[in-house]
Image (cartoon, rainbow, N blue to C red):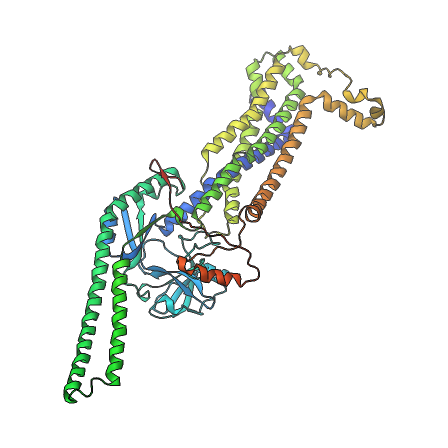
Length: 596
């Protein structure tokens, strides 16, 4: 080895504690920086992988008249589109009459696959799989009998619970959406065999595009493409809605006409019986109690049939409700959460890295200042400034690179996984933690500035002096009086060690600033953590105590029921007041992009 190289390795060996300290402080700064910055992308990537495995649909379409095979073919006219029709409706079930999102289970289901948590999927007609939330929150167990209300209109009302599962359509375990039955809140979802749903056709059409699965569901490109797909689908289904309405109406009318013929025939038979009765009795007996009762029953049936006919002409209109992944319960909240973590990552690690950089800068500076004698000897022996500087720059470079690599590997691989494990309110995610090369490159740049940058500045500053001056001890700074010394009562009350500490603090200003900034940065980090916690807790309290001043929201099926509902409320002693409001839900688009 060359003498300079030997000297560098000897310096590392002799000051191993200092070298390790530099490595550790850089490692800590990089660990926090890369780890927190990688957490946001890891949350999105993990969800994307989970949704890819379970094949979550990109678009869900609800129809008031259902879907058939022709609707599937129309949807698949779009390039790369795969459509699947499913039976779905909201029903009431259980002793507490909970609102349940009920799906028809198909063994060959290709989209929105269930994530089984315990038990198994249904195999026979009397088996059911419940939302895992029904187990954890509502206490249902395997083997129990689950009963639906009669209004659910199923082939049978009682089913055996054979499994609990999660669904990619409900990624947040704290919410399941709303409905217009029961208390207005969906408590959980359930799956029974498709043939038990007692529906003439599927009511939900799931559409998926394989070409879009490589993009993040929260990215602008994905959202823009989905909006374009919906516009194209709406054009395809524009004429289809009229055709579908006519088909269902004609089918219903043909059934009503058949019943009307049977009713007319029964009426004719009653009239004929009365006529024969009059003829036999010579006009003395025109009817009997039995014929009167039969005629009355036929009139009631006629009234019902006329009502059905009127209702059919008014209500059989196909209306499509279009949904994207953003409309699914908890989906947007997850994306907002990962965005917030990414936003915190832009500020929080910067403080930590700044502190690490300051400490490292000061440590490198002191190390080179202590090696003035060696630098003078090498310069006197004829070594060039660059050769001498390379020795100390290499020392700083190795410490910085070692700390950066170790910190990046640990931070990128472990911190995002810790964050993922804290997301317990969501379905089990497939952990995907990609190495963030961009943030790794930034951390290298910051580390080199803190270590190599400090070495370059200080060593070339030392090399500007002559060898003779370098080989002599550096003259101490002049002992100027500090401000505290001028305040004689205060200064005289201090002991000897305190006086030395204060003099050194003001004499070596770089150390003073490093101490102040270091303590300030550490305090800022602690205060930021408490501030975030308090802000989140306080926002909810302020929202519902100061801004949103109501305890309940009642949805009316029609304006006619308002007086009845208000009468019920006024009987409650805790009732104070109410406000009539009219609300609706819609989507806003600007320049072809969805705004909200």
